[in-house]
Length: 325
Image (cartoon, rainbow, N blue to C red; front, side):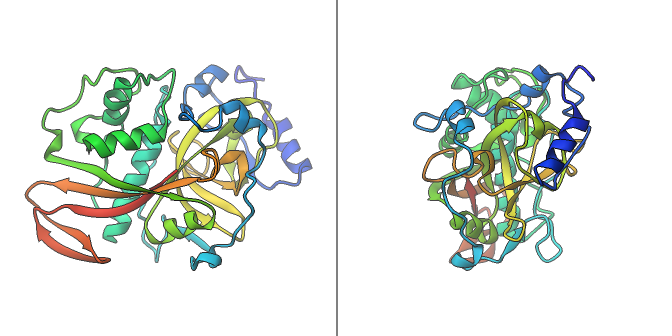
């Protein structure tokens, strides 16, 4: 067995014995050592939320299944294929740094802006580096400690978030050393948050865009290749945050975008069962926050949302909506 200590053959047998259908195998993560894998996590529960230990021992979410139809949402929805259009930005790789919160949050902002604009080609690529190495760093977040999406959202709302070209991401602790002084030429801000839970999360995804989810990662998750993941075996590795970009009531699962590169999972994406690993319940009674996103460009023709209608105008805010756990 390789240095990673994951017995993939035994895991596949356990999955079959448990009657699960997801596929395990070698991935970009299983090739790493246990310590290297843990550095690709990075969720720290905010004050008042369940600790990692409580979440790990809490089992599945206590909230019962509610069909999307109960809130008028379709039985399945995937932002990667809405009438043949993909509103999700490409898979990224956070590398050897516990910056998953920055990547999950950024992925939500990007997908939300594209979906609100009904433009799958909208050029939106916000800066994970600014979010983690500037705002996170100011609050004590390091690659070795991680962060929480609550704090990340507050920082975006208070200060705005620039685009990738203003501070390109590389893995490794930085004290905001790469930020372009002119980053406010184009940036996003948040103007409000709305608590969501249960089927309301599905309604939000189907009408307004992605949400972020944080969950407990067990060793078997690193070997995920395809199917609907449900924890089978292995120890707790840590907490992780991703972007939830869809759901499927037939398979009882969320569809998620990860930040471990396209060599992990199903091209970088994964499905996880409802309630599994506290994916929608880590923060207690509410599993998601809906937020208003405002993109503020300078001197170009854009669009804005007013009463649900997108209108063209020059030098105006570009308003969109999204949800965040």
